[in-house]
Image (cartoon, rainbow, N blue to C red; front, side):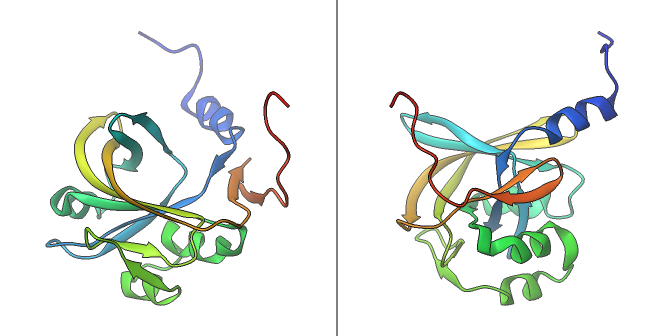
Length: 170
């Protein structure tokens, strides 16, 4: 089926979707890795799972698949520079990790010490769809802090919400 829109139109439309910024880490037999992603969401709470999307052309794809675990670290607005480093501004993985404080999760993955929340996941399924792998992770542990304003990505820029805006339904 031929689309009625171009790849550029699709990418421009997706840029208008606001998303939280996350650093996804892994550590295990294949080594230590990490990347910045906005493509993350919950899947179900029985069992607790989430998904992350990673470009299949990434040099780290095999690392994540072999380690069979990952940690999703939801960033605060204070992590803008770190997000850039893990997005590729810093090529050296050890230099990326050296720019923040980390805590080992039970699985052995690294959680950002001051992340808003970190989800320690066991890879339960990986599926290649087009240009990206969808990693579905069963959540093994959660670390969170009670404060912090999320770093968001909108219109190809980092933004943050300075305060809670309220809730749905009153």
